Image (cartoon, rainbow, N blue to C red; front, side, top):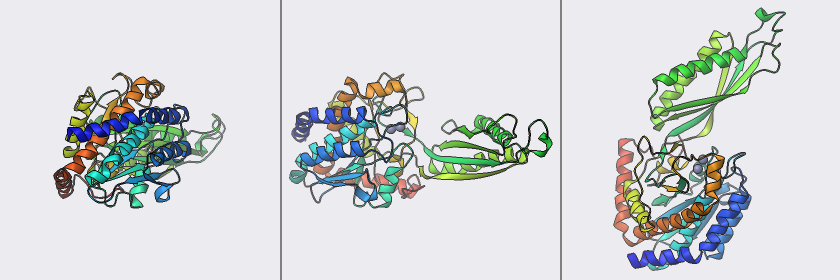
Length: 400
Ligand SMILES: [Zn+2]
Ligand SMILES: [Zn+2]
């Protein structure tokens, strides 16, 4: 087994310059979700030149791709993200995910025929809110896949991401315009409705679970102080530890917002944005394999604690409800630098980011090798997943 993994390592080393260059090119040209044409081409070209069979614009998404090698045996998907954030570029470091995933795919591909396995490198666009992976799942991208692997940069080497369920909510309040000085009694103030709704949620936040989050902004708040706002709007993120918890919390949030409208004599309409993101159901068989493989690169993965963790949401959560999956984190910055900051973006394009590309590729590729060489591990991962399904922990659906 060690000899096989060393051969996979050698492939990562051999393609190392190209992988790092791909990471840098994506980093220098950050593209928002579903507009990642440059990143799509960089990764598809790289995989194609390494001999994988590449489908561009896969599964009906222009900036998705699929690269395959091998046939039969266990099918392992390695996922590449590559979208950036508005204004702060690759502050989530998805350039590293893309390059590491491609490197893992290339390294695994070199052993696919010998080990009788199949590797599928999936380019999954639009992670930052668009739910690219949910669209891919609905189009069949995960059919026949035995395990789905990816690695995400962070400030720590973590065995798992504290990925909780999330749904975005858009709310619009309707009141009645009036001259704010001449005839305020005629008006119904939609901004008041929005502010009261906000304050209701602020009170609610004292009494939600510690692993739940609700945060919102006002997106419309009137046009002039001397006109009673007839319209106001807000966007909210509602997050809970599980999909089931999310449904209950969503109801509580809506009641808060409705009460604000009632108090101000206004009406409110709301719209839940799809797709919602599910919580992450980590497959411990796969986590253990990845942990051992990360240690080969000198990275000792830690379990998240209340002080050392990264909490957020990802569309990989949705995939983890349909296929045994992992979402470990790989350190590229000091622990006190949070993802989604400009500071993190500079680490993602720096030397530590480059090391993460190569270490991540090696650890993922070795995990693929484990699954191919020891199919009983695939069975163990499947049995664990079946138990998660039976208990309701995994829903069996990519859509929430
Ligand atoms: Zn991310
Ligand atoms: Zn992000």
